[in-house]
Image (cartoon, rainbow, N blue to C red):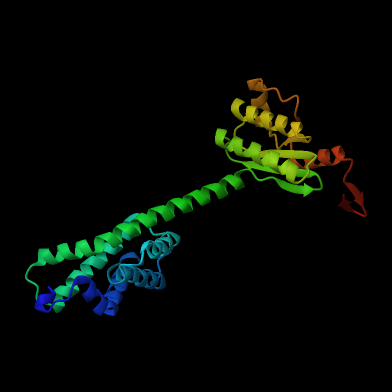
Amino acid sequence: MEDKGTPSVPKFIEIHREEILQEWIQQLFEQYDQNSNAVTEQVFQYIANEYLNVLNHYYFHSDQDISEKAKDVSQKLVQAGWPIHMVTKSLNTFERIVFQKMMEKHKIDHHLDLLWEIENIVSPILDEVLHQYTLSYERTIHLQKMALQELSAPLIPIFDNITVMPLVGTIDTERAKRIMENLLHGVVKYRSEVVLIDITGVPVVDTMVAHHIIQASDAVRLVGAKCLLVGIRPEIAQTIVNLGIDLDKITTKNSLQKGIEAALEITNRKIVSMGGSSCR
């Protein structure tokens, strides 16, 4: 093409960068403005600019690795909440704009050849961006999963040597393992003498859940602390009795307040009233 006065696709993009950029941003903003709260013109501006920088480096600075630049773009896409179909459609829009611009500014007879050339030019960049997007998305999901796991079984110190683990939601085998790990680690970290496991937010206590709680209580006892099970609602108590679950080795209370009072007594403390207020 360059022999006929038509620049190569990368050179054309470089020469008409601002014009292509503005039209691309406008089209993207029109396509997605109504569909995503995370999409703003500033986000489009940044990502479009960075994508063109990646393309520029790939073709005019071939000695430089583009993976880091593609990674930066992809992380911004993930952080902005762009789904994969939105990413691919946006980059396909860029290809279409380049084709239209080249057709407008240069008389090109072989349309299919031009489409093929643009596809070959852009595809390596698109592949790398999508590859980095997938890696970044997987990392984000992994970090979120780890954060949720930590939050799913927190051990909170409430008084000296007294900690509480509030549990909310269902307890499966994986979560039970996390509960055990956090309990044992927390008992040592906070030098707990009493640990309260609060199951107020656990909707169902079946044989498996009770088994996990008994195991946790035994493990806590082995490291020198006492475990109290609190938040036993009437329906949970009835279920435990009907299933024949033996909780004789575990002290139980129907509320967190009662559990705290019992924990204070175990540690030779109590709540007393002084001048109309409650003090430790």
